[in-house]
Image (cartoon, rainbow, N blue to C red; front, side, top):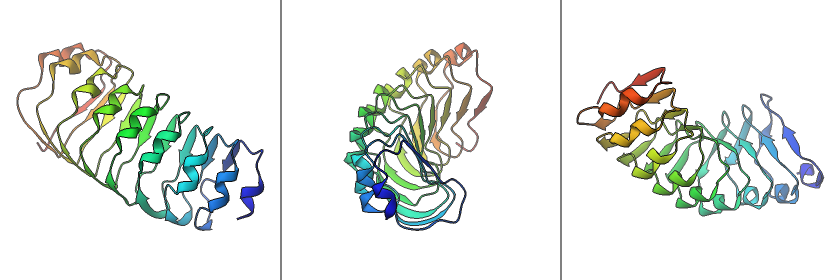
Length: 209
């Protein structure tokens, strides 16, 4: 609990230790915090507690590799300066809130190996993402049309979900893509001819559809 008194701290990085316990509520007092890396510890409780959403200067948050759980709630939209949100294997449930579209500086979204349901929100198309990893969840429906407008994406990993439908021809305008992984879903139809426009593509996997 003592960390809440470190109100001038900008970076708190305890990656790969054996820290136990929950994320304290007085985390909200660390209003100057920009980097919070709690990954690879033995932390329990909420992966994204309410106190986290009070850190308006936060740019990087990593919580993967712990024993946490919880969900993403609409409060995520308050973290307007967030550039990286990494919570793989964090037993997250529920839907990805539409407020994710308010994180205009978000570049890396890593929510792999959780239990997220519902659809990929169309609002994600407003975000200048470079790396999107939503693989190994329970997401349904198709790839939202708006996502094809994110020309900054270099990596798109949506494998092992319940996504279906076809791939839009506008995939060809995502010319910075190096990795596309869509295997183990329910996609159908022909591959768009515009796939040949992805001149930087190094990995394209669509097996098991």
